[in-house]
Image (tube, rainbow, N blue to C red; front, side, top):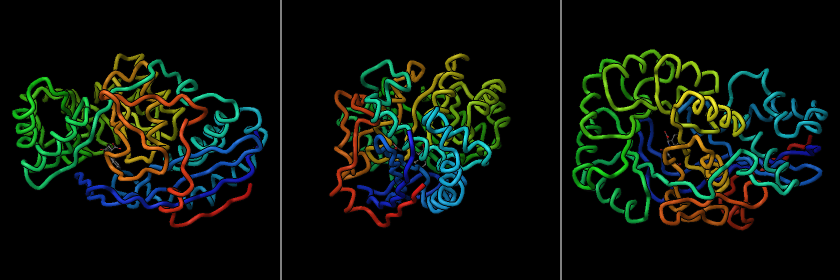
Length: 372
Ligand code: NPG
């Protein structure tokens, strides 16, 4: 395969309703898309970095900059590696550059999509999917009042979602969880996500969540506080799941060994790409640690790829793999829908979905072509 150039396209997608977490209120999604053009096919990559560095240190302007300034020139200088090894070469070529995993992931995804479309193979087949559909969970933001939260959760359950994740923060934790449990019963698959909003001093408070039969509590403490999570695990009985702390297969192995988590949320963007995500899946499975696929408000492109990843055998918990209409009135691809609480795994070549030009143009803010 010969990479001829990459288009960097910024789009802005309005959210159906504001999405509030412990770190921000999101009303629209500013996304960088990559279109890799090779001599054989073109492929799409979606960068999951947000507009501001509040979830992680990356942000969308910085990902565009590092791609332009370092990653695309490095790939242009390594044509033999790409020709011989295809998308697996991307991670190796970019390895000397520290961090910037969301930018690396987007570029690898675009090259992989082009390679797979040319070979008429799907993401699912390439990554090792063993299911043709995956159970769909939904992430529910922070609300001002409990009744509004209960209405939202009820709506998602009516839509068929099989698992509810509540965003929590200090002041919005025990009460909303209790209210949802009471209203929707003990059988509801329920978990919470703190996005680093607590410290170890809150351990006793967080232990109050133990009464509610949660599947897990996700990332209660800071990203770098792996030891803190291991200590917290000795105080609370709700299983601890790590998200922000896990940035590679190596950090996953370390967190598992330290006893910091019994579950991992795997997000391809956070860990540098779908291929590293598979390696984390393998590490988790080898240690008997459950995994599930996280979401970052992706368009249909990232959502399709996540559905393929979530179909690997070690993804034993429902992921944040929700339908396009969870966040968007109109997606840029054909809308991804859930059927009986499950998202079908796309079977077409590559991602199995492609942006529809007129929908894409409607949300595009800038387009830039980088010839290689
Ligand atoms: O379903 O796409 C989705 C969103 C799931 O809550 C979700 N994502 O912390 O996991 C998270 C959160 C997030 C969203 C994080 C956007 C960062 C950016």
